[in-house]
Every structure is written in structure tokens, then in C-alpha cells.
Length: 276
Image 1 (cartoon, one colour):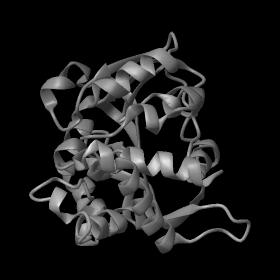
Image 2: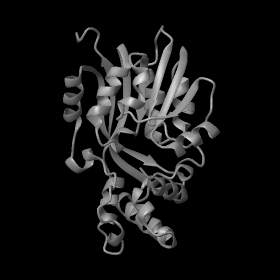
Image 3: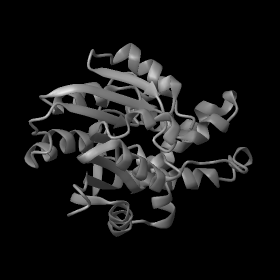
Image 4: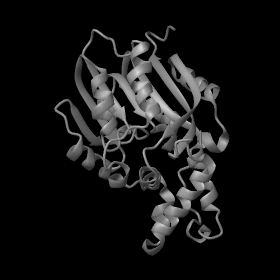
């Protein structure tokens, strides 16, 4: 996966929809209220901004947060910019059991924010989370189902001006976008594994950015197509990509750029003795 870690997080600016879910929704559901000392796994932590600023404060009784990401660049950045005595950052993949098996049965809570849409084998990832959780342990998952960003990636991949650079590549567009998966698809998958669905909400979210420059920096950093463009043309491609994305989304009435995506928020629990 070719994300640009430095562009992704020059400063920590969480998406508003993520902030509302973690700060407000979870509190209303009393998800973080527990008498036991929590051992938390953050899956797809990126450069650690969400981990240190939003996940860490969720848990008043916290023993440790293990934060993992598949990209060494992201982990290096997290260790430099978002270190904390209670957070341990490591390179690992939730799809690869060999990289996470040492956590088996030890995790009380798992958090994964905007990671699962990038995974090629979501079933394996959910199965691995199930194995890592203690009995009765819970997970919060937020993932993108469909989005204007993914639609723009597909559009630009087939743009006659740029198509020569994108033959037989992995565009990292989510299967849920390509196959139009909705909540029932994930509910069945999770229940078949042995999870209990405590909360689910599918909703189109609008995230407003502070400036066009922030918008360009963020979406350029997660557009894998950029890595296939010759250096001399990268800036031109980024500009074309952002213009196409803006065309799909438009500007708010106050002139700020925004992104729309159909998001799925989940809270799931590893059943106690497999009894609902």
C-alpha cells in the first residue's frame, strides 16, 4: 500500500465524523465504562494521531494500547510524533495471523478507524480480531462502504490522459464500493464468526476540510495512483485528481471543500460461551 505518511499527517486533524463517533457516540453508549484494566488494540493506527488524541483518552482504566499498522513509515512517524508511555507502536497486519498471534486472548477492546476498507481479506481480519479478544471483549470498527473518493480513483484510473500509467495495478478501491456491500453483508459475516452485534449504524457522512490545501494534501496522500505517475507529472496529476473529486463533492456554502462517504459504524462483542 503506497500511502504518503508525511503528507497524511503533517499535523493531526481528525475527520469530524470520526471525532463525533469516538467522543460522543461511544460515550452515550457507555462503551468505555469498564471496571477492568483495559488492554486495547488499535488496528490501522497510521501515524498515531487518532491513537494518542482520541483512542487513549477513551479509557480511564488503561493498562496498554498496542497500535499496529502495516506500513513501517507510519509506525516510524507515530513513534516520533505521537509517542506515549501507554502506547506501543508496531508494524503488523491484522490479515496476517503470524504478526499478531502473540496477542491471542489478551485484548479487552479493539478499535479500528478507517482501516478495514483497505483490507483485501476482511473476513480473515475479523476472524483474527475474534481470536485476539478475550471472551466478552469488544471491538469498535468504522469503515467506508462507498465514497466519492473511491469513485474518483476509478474515474482517474480510466482517464485517457493518465490511463497509460495504470495498467494491471492495484487501485486499492474497497470491495464494498465495487460490490455495493451494505450493513446486512457485514452483520452476517460477523455473526457467522461468533460476534454479537451491539450497535450498527450506516450513514452518509460529510466531512468538511479547513482549506483546499488540506483537502489536496490528505486525499493525495491516500491515493495510490499517485505513486505510479512519473515525478515530473505528479503535481499535475494531483491537481487533476483533486479537481475531479471537488467536482463530485462541490464546496460548502461557506466555500470549504468536503467529502461524502457512506460509513458503517460497528460495536461488536465476542460472545460469552457463544450464548447471545
